[in-house]
Length: 109
Image 1 (cartoon, helix red, strand yellow):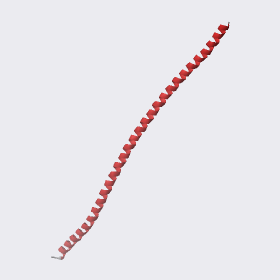
Image 2 (cartoon, rainbow, N blue to C red; image 1 turned 60 degrees about the vertical axis):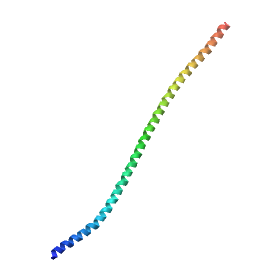
Image 3 (spheres, rainbow, N blue to C red; image 1 turned 135 degrees about the vertical axis):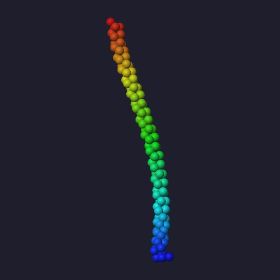
């Protein structure tokens, strides 16, 4: 074996040792990255669930608001109807007092 061949073999051995030591580091990094990705996916799923829950809450609140608007319009129509009834009762009351006054005047004459 000549010196050049020995150098080539030693270089290959040293390169393989470096590669093997670097390979362990890369494998560790790959495990860390996979774990990080898995945790990120879990976080994404949780955030999607929160987003869906918030959408449900928004739709529930919207339906509550619509229900409140319906109740308010019903109450307004009831108040308007009651006002009309009160006006009719007032006019009937006034007409009754006027009628009683006219009848008493007619009876007196």
